[in-house]
Image 1 (cartoon, rainbow, N blue to C red):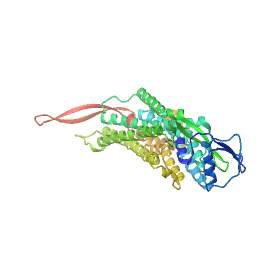
Image 2 (cartoon, rainbow, N blue to C red):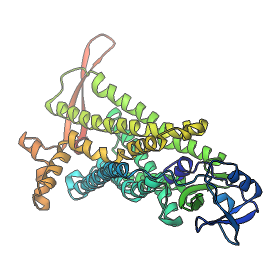
Image 3 (cartoon, rainbow, N blue to C red):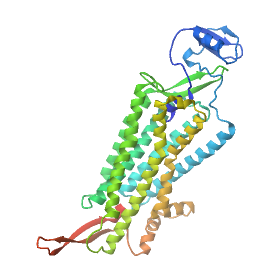
Image 4 (cartoon, helix red, strand yellow):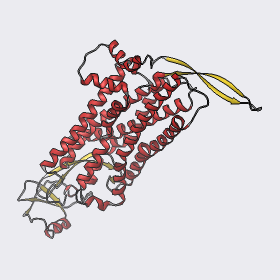
Length: 436
């Protein structure tokens, strides 16, 4: 379903995967040789393909490696290759550069090292992995339907695809749960950095387990065309056959769909709906202090930012998952015109999700925005200065966003006799946890 394993379903067009003995022939119009059975000879002689003068030879590809196509029709025209190279190259550059800056801003500045930001770093690492170690190689393969990177990297690339996507979506889900607990249950202890590291490791372990079949069953195969050309394909060769006909592959894809899309999407819909009702729908009794108002605004900002990240993730990956479900149940779609271009659009949309997050942080968070400005303006500053500039906005307002403020909240409780009793409840709010 993912990345290279899907290329065989898109690009193979009628490869015969049976193994059987046959006659060995070579073409006088090409140096390539083929093993053909009598039925294969009948097919060639009675097809519309150009006739060749065949002679017996002793060594050649097996019949399962012969594609009945005259040539490799999956090589895009040069002008399409230029356009797609610019589109994918821009996406990779923005994703890699933007996420690298995000990681540096968090790890290089003490004031940015919060629980939410640590999860964002994990998200950025996953996005960098998919854009550099997977997209570059898959896109190169998609330009001409050929995988020139060998069997070992076929396994690595497919493995990284599932691991990185799993890490991204599970990290988004962890952030939503953290926001849910912090806002719905404000008196509960906040997640410690040790717990954050443990959850992060668990996310990568789950992703690695999900991706294990890609290490075990990914392989490459050389496919020959009637004109003598050949190409290598990277695909999943399951115990019950290749991905195009394997029940194991379909079950695996359904599991991936549930774990990396449906379950996290449903979880985030629930958590952010409850958080939204709490922040925008509920009205407290009594007057809020100035610090309470500032805290509420801060919570709303971070929640809005993460909701935008979640929505963009859902939109980017929906066509990708839908494509594989449709093509499995309606395989005739693979024969449609321009299916290669349509797939490239869907693939680019899914992979481009890795470049949107840094743009969202820069757009919706003042601290990341100031950090990006400093880097783009090539201004040099030491560590103490960098910590100061990250607090500059709130410092100008005379408020420290990272101080631990003890806020007194007044609530009214009605007694049985109808009289109101004022309750004073001290709630310790760590502003740093609500401001990235």
